[in-house]
Image 1 (cartoon, rainbow, N blue to C red):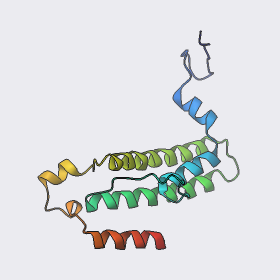
Image 2: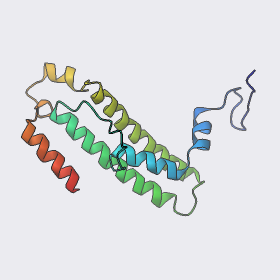
Image 3: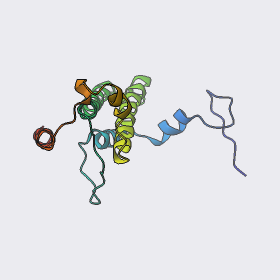
Length: 148
């Protein structure tokens, strides 16, 4: 039978997601997770990927999320510089995790060939976000990302 655990902050018989998550995550692990989500980590030998963004707006969203992750990691490192156990440090890494999760969710949708803008673009094909980049534009964007 499962044992019950109580925390000083909760009267529940189950540990909170946050307490379990924070106890298992160190700032270094979060940095690694953030690098993976931002696309700056070393790719795995198995490759991965599949799918891709169909609309220009989705490409822009991927780029913005990657930039946000990098920015949040820098902020978290600055905040946690002296005390990695402070509440401010935990909040900073929570923000990194939230943005990283948003990018991971987007990546999963794209792997399933489910561009999040699909329904919007069916009704509003004339918007800039719904432009469909041709192959040359995609190659140029990939080259620009590799240079950064």
